[in-house]
Image (cartoon, rainbow, N blue to C red; front, side, top):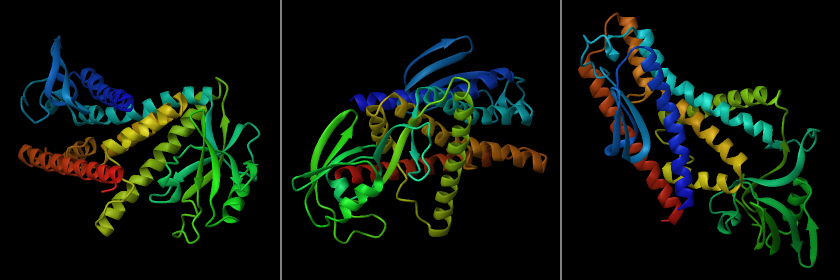
Length: 362
């Protein structure tokens, strides 16, 4: 229940910030905002202030800002969306995306001040790094590590082989111990969210390619924090890096879909994201803020894709309008948006089903 509440809170913040971008720029552009909604209808509760209705709706995974004239109605009303110049309409559409990127930056500033855990190079250690740890970075499905519940972020403390206990101080040391005991029962002590646990595990003799005996990816990590003068600059660098890497990841997904007619196995739905949110929250405030920044950037990149029903699709139609010198037919635009919305719902059902299958091992 706590994970669900944290997830709803995180999604709420991301959606409200995104829609606030549309809302305030629409107001600035002189448009009439009829409704600002959190979640999707049916409506649970609403109140009206001025000319705008503020609503909370039953389906919590999203939100919307309803502007007069978005569907080309009231075209002659000077305060309608469709009556405004293309530049102002584009500004309203792009504002939500930019707000999500800005939110990521705002979240990463305190992370830089408090100190975040980063991956280090064992051969060229950053002298500023503190509290060095050997952590799990990734766990392969159906591996020995996955079967006993190991998670990304778990810290290695020690390994016991028979009666000899060895404190873990480097990735190479741990890999040597594991590779020297293939097929044997060893006891590993891990730390997670301040709690230690010792569990037996048997490294595989013949693991699948690229997985290793336990099915984990390891890394040396350390905490690095910056002064109040440096933190805004480092947060900007981190936001840029996350945004570019996320963009490249989306490009890879789309390329795979077009060339291979299949979606990548790593694509996650609301259930998996809720799980990751809970894991991040258990690891502390810094990890939760970092995770929120990552999801906020993902939301920005997803929305700017030139796909019907998304902000990027609406932006593309305005660009086409400018190129051809006349608006796209309202009938065509509404049809494209309806088709896009249906496809997005089907995608949501698909990834949610995959999440359920993965959780319950159907």
